[in-house]
Structure formats: C-alpha cells, structure tokens
Image (cartoon, rainbow, N blue to C red; front, side, top):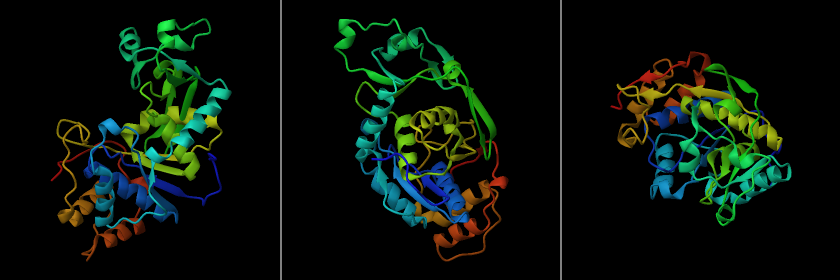
Length: 307
C-alpha cells in the first residue's frame, strides 16, 4: 500500500479514539477541523484511531459516529479504522528497517525508566539497545522486542498556525521512540504518520496536547519520504483546576438532546460571531464555515465548565 498519492489541495481529518465517548473538547476539535477544511473547499475525513484494544470502550466507535451525525457533521468518503490497516504499518516499519533507522529494544519500561531523566514528554530513553556495541543477552533474545526509531541530535521545528514556531531537539527532549510495542500493538506515532501520508492529509487541526508529538511525527515523515502537513494546534478546554477536559478528568459525554446549545458554546470558544436562530445543527455548521477565521482562535487554554 503506497504512502503517498495525488489528492486535492486541502484534505483534513478528525481522528477520535474509541477509548471513550465524545465530550466538549472533542466537539471543539471536530468543529474547528471541519470548518477549516470546508472553508478552504477541502475534504474532511473521519479516522477511528482504535490502536489499543485493552483501553477501548465497547461500542464507543459506533457511538462516536452517531454523535457526529446528530450534531450535523458529514464526512467525505468512508470512515477509516486503524485496526484494519496493520499491513500499512508493517510496510512502513519494513522500509525503516531496510534503511537501518530502527532497532529492536529489549528493555523493560521499569528498567530503562529507573535510570532515565525527564524530557518534553516524559522519560527520555537512553538509547541502550541502539548503541553500536550493544549485544542482547540470551534472556533478552527470548523476548519479543519493541522497535524504536533513531532520532537526530538536532532541532526540528515548524510554524504552527495558532501556536507559532515550535521546536524540539529530539535526542535531548524525547529520545529514540517506539513504533511497535513489545506487546505487539502499533504505537500512535507510526500509525498516525502512515495514515496521514496514505490518506493525503494536507492540514491537521487538533488539540495542543498533541503539539509535543509533532516534531517526532515530522522526523518520521522525513524518514518515510512523506510530505509534512500544515499544523494548527487548538487551545485546550480546561476545568477550574486547569486540567484538560478529557475522559481521564471525567468530562461528560456530549448530550445530543442539547446539541444546539453545545455547538453554540464551542463556537463562542473559537471566537465565532453569534449565529441566528436555526432549525437544525447543520445550519450552525454552515454558519461556522462561512465565518471561519483561524486568526481569531485563542492561542491559549480556555477555562470552561461542561454545562
């Protein structure tokens, strides 16, 4: 399966994970990514990022799609499920192996983190299994390894449409990172890059919690010869404690009986003008597209209550 094809000038996407139901933060991302795509005359795809079965909620994927439809969203093409695309990820990892850009890692998380320092997104792997003189023991060879991507000791930066310039030194801030876990599950970083390339994603509008992942993804795009999309990382919606509204902070699922109120609430967070009275949610989406201006989106977190 090829990693790049010819697509229209703008292809965006919304990529929820079925580890829970959609909440107010999900609605903000869906609305902003949809509006930006449609305001540019582009396509808006939906991709279900169901890579981690042990963490997924039964029935969540179907509920997410029903909720999107109830709020008036219409996506282009068929919904893509990452759980059905393992062949694509195998092909990408195989290419990296041929280039000797990846290596097997036999370290347990407990062992390597015990001696690791903190970086931009947790512990920084020390590169033990990737060293030229490293030889795995017989005990190690009996294990199924993870596969890590080598990272350069250089700054990788990009210009985000909302945040501005953002940069990391991957060797110092992140370390060689996992593409295939030892338990056999594909890591998010590889899957998202392979999917974005294969689907021809040109613009990514998502939350600022994923900003820290972007330099890793840009490096992986370069390793695979894929184009780098344009990025816009949206402000997070946070509670009074400054915590991101998420499944972990018990953000309630979207109530479809209050869809117009919730859409108007999210529109206000994006600094859109107040919309007139409407008969259906799709009219609020059309208003959002008509008045969309990324320059007016707040650059920092927005404190809100879910009700």
